[in-house]
Length: 483
View 1 (tube, rainbow, N blue to C red):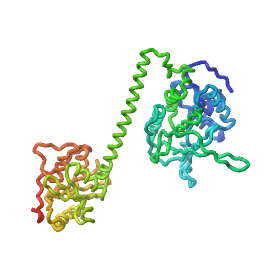
View 2 (cartoon, one colour):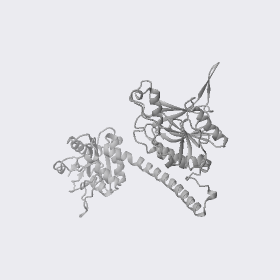
View 3 (spheres, rainbow, N blue to C red):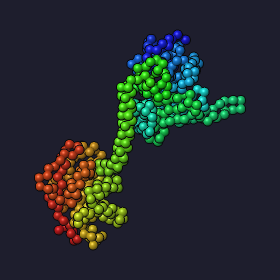
View 4 (cartoon, helix red, strand yellow):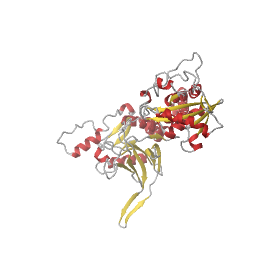
């Protein structure tokens, strides 16, 4: 192996089990597969600004006994196994854990492999001197991942960095598997050792980024997906992982990223303590606000989706939520009367009783929707002779296959609406009033009341004006029908 001095230079030595990419030339068309694979393996690390991040790479053929960490070490003889053994021995001789970063899977698998009938390609990370392995299964494109709560600072920082990968970057769901020992009497399974701590998980709770620690604490593995920004990872390694797990490594090389607290001035100690406290409060506040945002979205999403994209019961339920929020007492008539004997909802407020028909139209709304409400109004006295209605409203989610900003502002042309004895309300307008908590607008729209004199229309979320509600007072409905 090549000789290497160990005098402090401020750079932390890191082992990478590939050849130095700097002197390599890109292989030509006639190059054999071995040379191509060797070049590709090294090229993935060619763009790392090692010195800028406070690290020094130790490639294949270089001594690794003083390395503070290893990236993708190799078990295979002649391809990094010797360097891996010296790295582990060096860490053990210093009484330090061996800190290892390993990638799961291969990001550039071609489409033929991704669509293979034998299943999607996976990956595997094996431990040295310990039973078990981490096996990965590549997730489908578009998989959603999230950060596990209550992580320590180093793990959380890694998770946040990897969450910022491009949307097209692949993920692998990881599980710990038993290993097998082949012997003269057959295969003997060996239960996996150590502890796997998830950092990022998929929608099913399976880890896609994780930290594995051996039972004796001698090895700490961070398993991350292939296809990462290695500058981000190396920067995290020096600034976060090593100070957390192997702080002596920074002291040995006199890294600019570490100062022994015992050697600090009072001003340094005060500034560092204040910074740590600021970070602690930030993480607490961020976690609290993330929880509040998650809860608010969980409450809002059914209403937003129902009013803007829904039909049937989904749309009806969302309209009922808005009407109740605006102060109406709402009865689900389909549920109370059974089937479709009447309109969808009965809304009552301040002595007014309104039949509310809720409909959806993928395209332009047909006038058949109007006639349905008219029939319900005519039939109502037979269903509830002791409970006359005083008003009615037709709420329509029209053109719901279009983006809300591309839909016509009105459900029907005004000349159609002006001839009606009840208002026709776009569910998109109902959504805007609900989102801005404009309950008088909701009440006025459903009851057909005139806005106070001088009140101006306000722009909606899409930038267009919100239609005035109750441009004229709608005729009241009595027990016997329209007045």
